[in-house]
Length: 163
Image 1 (cartoon, one colour):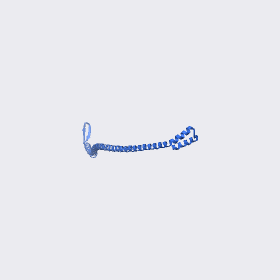
Image 2 (image 1 turned 90 degrees about the vertical axis):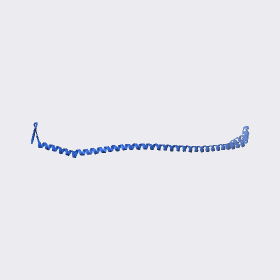
Image 3 (image 1 turned 180 degrees about the vertical axis):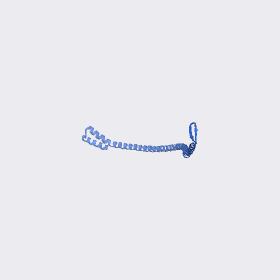
Image 4 (image 1 turned 120 degrees about the horizontal axis):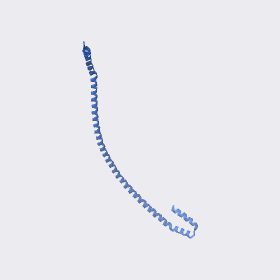
């Protein structure tokens, strides 16, 4: 059976087979192509949404951790400053104690040295006072010309007394 429409001859059985093939092809494409592609795209969208929500939770957790860390650092910093302050005050006390002891020791040494110098000065004066008359006599003899040979003896005696 052939239909003639506006100069076109259309075979009805071919037309029917074409329509049936079209619907079979449509069914097969839907079943094996469109549905799996749509399923894959929906699963991918769900994974993307899950990843985005997980990322937001991670950002929120990161912000909370950063805030907690900042607070902990502030507390640790304050504790460290207190420890440093305590250590400095203890060091200053120890320094003052050591300086006081050193000053007292220096004063004692200074006093001992002054006493020693005074004692040695007194002993030297006594020795000079004891030798002074003899030295004056020898010097007088030498100046008067008597005992020129004794001048060397006087020089030797003076060197010996210096030692």
